[in-house]
Length: 337
Image (spheres, rainbow, N blue to C red):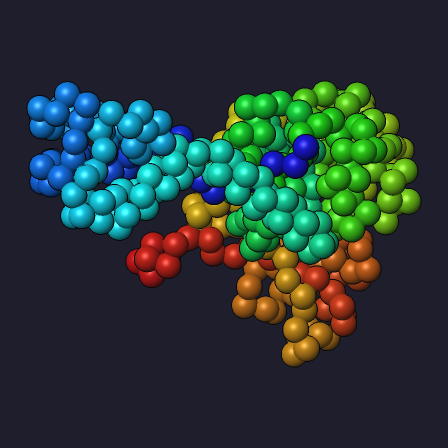
């Protein structure tokens, strides 16, 4: 099942609005009948009281119409034709409004689903919307990827609601199943990020993605244990990030070189100061040393491979190189200080 971002009001507010409209219509009808009460006749022939007017308004608007109170004067009949009959139709529309809203919402969802299936392409699929999955989505958004190009695959109901509340399209199901990944149009995807809670599930997801895409879609996976990283790569993952090993190295650095932890946190935390970024080499930069540029370049990406500045190949920028650099990620107001 595909879940789109919520675009509706709360049920309580919608119900309160309908209830207020129905009550207002009843009171308006009572006022119209009471104002011309002499033009009505009841079976007791003792005239209409205010309670009789309420009774007549309710049974008339609800189309019950017992016939014990009837309009006899020309003015009363004119009011029934001009006002009470249209009010009866409006009252019925209010009563069935919930059903109409459900049908309308189903129609809108169907239209959105059809339109989405026609346009989804070059998107990123996030398998798992836990802590790692949410962090991955945040990083993608910070780098300029539109929310419409992110699809979350998750089977946990609470996580699905979080994803749709964040404005993301979410697909309910297991990412280890081919049918679920096909719903996410994995063959047209730009990349698949595997952020499941267990390494065995990550391996199954990587194998399924590789089988469906014939290795044409980039797969990035997170592993809890370093010993599972080679298995994930054999399963089709192009990049594997070992969370336990990374956390361990940071813990070690916090003891031997505490300032490095601050630098790493600064690089990984958006809006704090420094941030890692990548851009294409410009024409006037080709042939120059990366160290001569105004921006702090720390590596080159050449034909899909990382070239460090310490290597002889990284001494000169070539056409088609991607520059990995450190940018100022502070808000403009802060950076200007």
